[in-house]
Length: 130
Image (cartoon, rainbow, N blue to C red; front, side, top):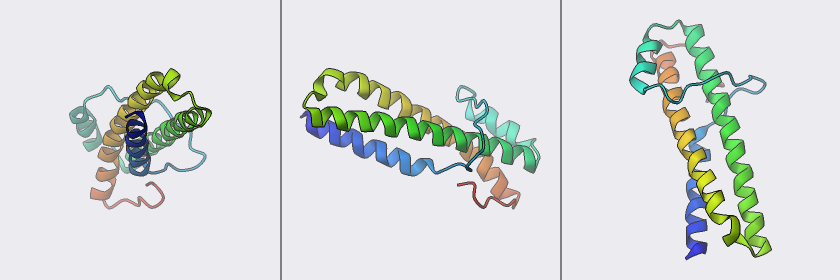
């Protein structure tokens, strides 16, 4: 039972990482707001210039990359603890951490897509942003 749950979580995590994409290298992640409703993000994006949209998209992609790295580290801990033969001790804590990170990744991806899609709509250069 626990092994199946572990495999399911591992598959879910890898799927999340694949969907997250990558940000530009060397771009620091600025403050991003996952609490702001998507409708509000969309309304703000409509008023932004191409440079502002690119800046926000880049910040979100960098945040996604950082969260993905956190998730990978937690998954590595989980794999190591299962190899050590004591996965049940920290399993619930790690499972909760994974759930928080995957939720956060989904929120970041949803908001970054607003900025990215607006850039595409404006026919701006989006090469290297995914």
